[in-house]
Length: 133
Image (cartoon, rainbow, N blue to C red; front, side, top):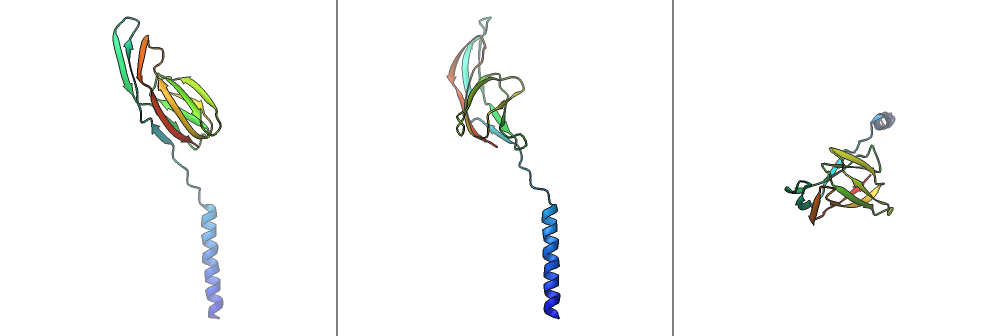
């Protein structure tokens, strides 16, 4: 009799565990922000001939809830990107505060150059790489 009770208890515990696993919500991955390790650095002058320049880090944000989409934040520059999995490439002029681009899923690389800011000389194009879900 004892064997039957142990087997019955074990099957009840296993059934309860399976029920809990089936009812549990899957863990949602959090959005990821990737700050480009190489900033864009430029000097120049505006249309009024005032000297200007900037050093700026660009952020690429991805969210598993929106696969294939990258959001570039904090940039008024031009971002040139390429998806290494699909070969898809594009150029987007940044907008404040951010711009969303359909880069597709997979590893993506990008460079950043100054946009149309009068005359600008790029001293260092920004660059970064990230994976899009």
